[in-house]
Length: 544
Ligand code: N01
Image (cartoon, rainbow, N blue to C red; front, top):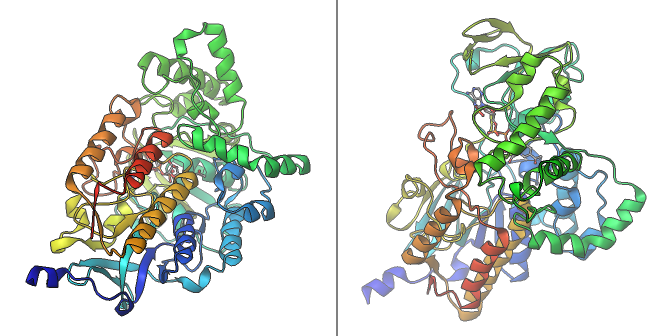
C-alpha cells in the first residue's frame, strides 16, 4: 500500500553509514568500537581536533578526577587495564587526555572519526527510515541510526554581562581553555564561579598569580580530595584488584567505590557520629558525600548534622572569621549540590594575594575594558576566568537542530523537561539512541557509559539478527519511565536546590525552573530496568 511504500527503509548500502555517532569522548569512542564488532559502517563526528570529550575541552589549570582513577577508566579490556598505569589516585587532566589518546590508538579508532566536524542538524527521514545529518561546514550524511554521545556537561555558558566582549586582557571559559599554557605569574587574575571547576582552578592559580580575586555568588560545600601518587606496590595491587574494583562499582548506588553507610544518622551516638564524620573527612575521594549515613540527603536534621560538621572545618581552616562565614553555604545543605573536592582550597583564602568577593551581595554589573565593575567597586584585571559552568544535560541537545517524525524539534518535545525511555530513547525520534542522555544514572559516569553502550549495542545486534531497521520507544513506556524518574527524585533534598542537576542555569533563557533532569535512583536499579526490557525482547519498543 501507499503507506507501506512511504515508510519502506532505504537499502542499507544506499545510506552513507549504518550509524553516525556524535562525539568522540568516552561514550563515542567505546560505542564506535562496539559497533565495529557488529560489522557496521560507522562514522564519528567530533567538533574538537582530538579525542577525549570532556577531557579534551577542560584543560583549565588544576583539572583532575574526583573519582579514583582506577575506578574511572574503561573496564572492558583486560589488556588495556594491564597496559595502562595511572600515576595518581586522582589523575590530572593531561594524563586522562593521554589515556584516551592511548585508547584511540590501541583500538585504531581514529580512521572512523572525523575531527573539526560539528553537527548542526539531524532530521529523521520517515521515508527511507534514516537520519540526515548536516555538519556546520555544510556537508550532509545519512545513516540508519543516530547515536548521541555529546556529554552531560559539554555546552559551556558565559554570563550575560554587559561589556563582556570589550575586555582588553585575556579571558577564558574553563571549558574552552587554550592549548597553550597561560602564565599567571605577577598577573591580576579574576575567577568567576565557585563550582567544582572554579574550586580546582582557584587553588591552582592562587599558587602563582600576582593577585587573585574570586567572585563567589553561592558558596559550595567542599571536602578534601586527599590525592597522592600511586606507589609501585599500590600499582600492582590495583592491577591485580581490577575485577574486584569493577565488581564493587557495579554494586554501589552511583558506581563509585564508595557507597552509603546502611546506618541512619541518629541511630548512632553523637560521639560515634563525629568520629565517623572525622574519618570520612580524612579519607580520599567522595566518601563523605556518597559514603555517608544513608539518610543524609533525605532527612533535614541528618543533613544539618553533617553540614554543621563541615562548617566547623571551614571555620578551623580559614583564619579570617568573616571570610570563613562567606565560604559557608547558607541556602543549601551539604551534598545537595555536587560536592567539589579540594586540595588546600580553604587555605587559599589565608594568602595575602587572594581576595574573596561576595557577588550576591555586590553583584557584577558589567565587564569593562580593564576589568570588572560590581555594584560597589571597580577592579582592574589582566586575566578573567569564567568558571561559570554549563547548560547541563539537555544543553548539548538544544545546540543541535534535532527533528523527529513530522519535523518536531526535540527542543520543543522537551520544552517542559525531558521525557525519555531509560534516558536512551525518545518517542517520535526513531533510531536515535542517547548515551548519557537526560534521565540516565550519573554518578561515576564511565561506568554508566559502558553500560549504556552495551545496551545500545545489544539492541542493534537484535535488529540486525531479525532483519529489522527501526526501533522506537512506545509512548506508554516513555510515560512509565518518566513517572518512575520523577518518583525516585521526589523527597530528595537535592531536588529542592538550584543547580545544574535540577536544570537551573541563570545564564540561559528558559532554564530558571527546576526540572528532574537526571535519574536519581540507584545504578543497579537502573540496570535492572534496562536489562529486563532487553531480556523480554523489547516489548516497550516498536520494532519494525
Ligand atoms: O559549574 P557549576 P562547574 N554570575 O555550574 C557561578 C563536573 N565537574 O563547571 O552557584 C556569577 O557547578 C555559579 O554560581 P551559582 C561536576 O559534576 C567535574 O564548576 O549559580 N556567578 C557557580 O558558582 C560539576 O558539578 C570535575 O550562584 C555565576 C559557578 O559559576 C560540573 O562539572 C571537575 C554566574 C558554576 O558552577 C559543573 O561544574 C569540574 C554569573 N552570571 C567539574 N553564572 C571532576 O570530576 C554562573 N556563576 C574532575
